[in-house]
Image: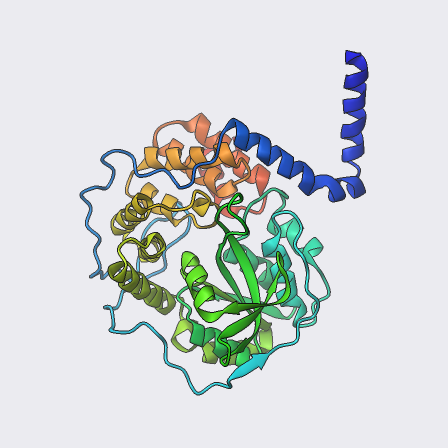
Length: 412
């Protein structure tokens, strides 16, 4: 009897590895595995609050003048900064008079496969410009591990700008509704990343939308939603509220020959530093007006991290966690790891990353930051193991490769 069960199990495993069968059943199997993990280790509602005594006495500095320069996203060259302008009375961008509505042609809506909203939404954006492909083409590069829970705007940019002929991708934080309308009225669809909660059981998560139109009359955008369907209306206020969770990042795909035109439409936001200035101002204002808004504090931490003030960023992240941040937040935005690491809070990084990896083992960024923190704590073997794991899940993760080579020139 036992032998028959073993044989049946082996046969099912072999059949499951057949590509056609695997493609059909993969997401169903992953749902079951996720449910089993949650029964064994029930997911929390929020990220853990800061460790005892961590950052309690740190004030958030909003009058910063760091040294001009770019801030790296890796730990290999932590330094630099850029000048932060003082908070202005209004952070809402002014705009020229725009048409009351715009509607752009969508070249075929695409429903996402498992955890594939990023690749699917990007492919819809590319197809607007005549690209012939689908998420089957974008996903293998953007997320070599099919269980990867997030594709970042930077990964999208790297894919388009190095692998798609004649098209270019640009992303910036600190957008607003006027800017979205401006781009669409000029013929450019816009991808936004936003908070999303399909139902109470699944909880909060991040999600990409492709916006292809707007209507001032009923105050709605038209979205191509890889989860919900084509031409889904989204209210202006609803979008802005959900968009806040991602520092109002916007992503534009355009023909390379249109670069000058796009930069002109972006005005000051053509400059990355200025965009982060606007995002910083918005975070300052929103966290002041509503001190219990965790996303406002998190955005403040993200922008402060960009400018290299990691002490203030860590304090802002502590505020956000004290209020309550959804436990999936570190799937999508990892500046919290960066800030804590750069102020020497290595146990905090290890604790946060380990908590995330217990729930979701397919997070290369969490392995990367835990590896760096473990190395800083003297755990060389643990660091090498984590960095190798990050590369196992995503061989295109350049920062992990560099960090591993720095620790162990032979790659561990």
